[in-house]
Length: 161
Image (cartoon, rainbow, N blue to C red; front, top):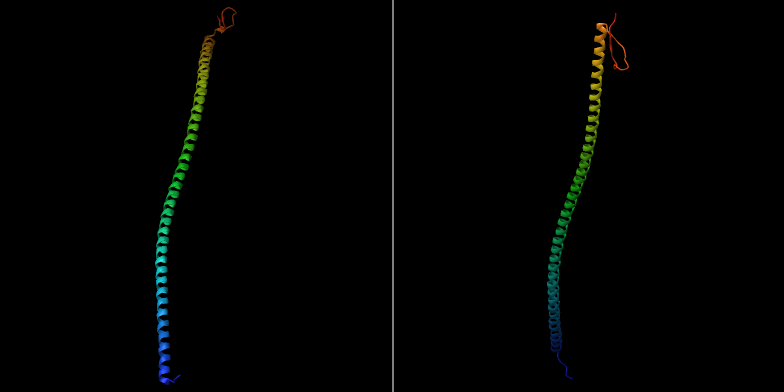
């Protein structure tokens, strides 16, 4: 083999190294391009997933808000029903009280009516007794003594001599 000058050997080695470096750079660029495509695909996928997540989150929030509203309405209606039930119970108590009061009032009226009739009878009897007493006083003032007679009734006239 013939000796080649150093420059040629050196230049050939440099060309080989240069080819290897160029090939390496091309391979690195290809790898970088592939990695960039993978990163872009991952970004696109993540953006898509983020959009899906955001949409699902909005829908979930809408459902939660709607549920809260329904729960609030339900709670409000339950409260209204409780108040209405309390009012119904109050009205029932009042109606029972009104019925009881009406019965008591009727009893009082009947009792007073009976008492008034009793008092009227007593007044009537007292008036009769008063008339008899007045008549006896008048007779006594006139000087006539009344004695009981068996067939003459309670009072009979007898003159005093």
